[in-house]
Length: 103
Image (tube, rainbow, N blue to C red):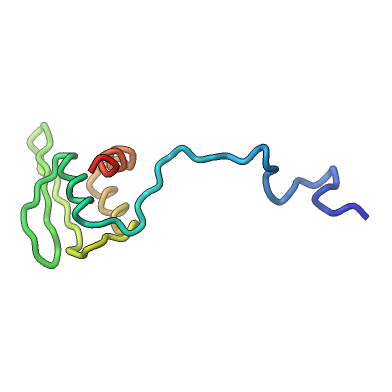
């Protein structure tokens, strides 16, 4: 009997080895060290306003508008928290990853 994935009318449940796709997008940090995240955000124009249980940052846009950002004051920042904060502040993922790699 022919296995079900070799039958001509069914597609294999996984891609063949010669069609495996390798991602070229840099991976988003899972547990990012906060000092490295702050260096990356500083490179993107943010300045620390206040430190405490939370870290308050701000960036002045070219049109004079201030963009605030608040991060938890932990040693590491979870990837989901970082993604949410970046989305709320209007920072593109690629821009942050580029600055994060250089930090």
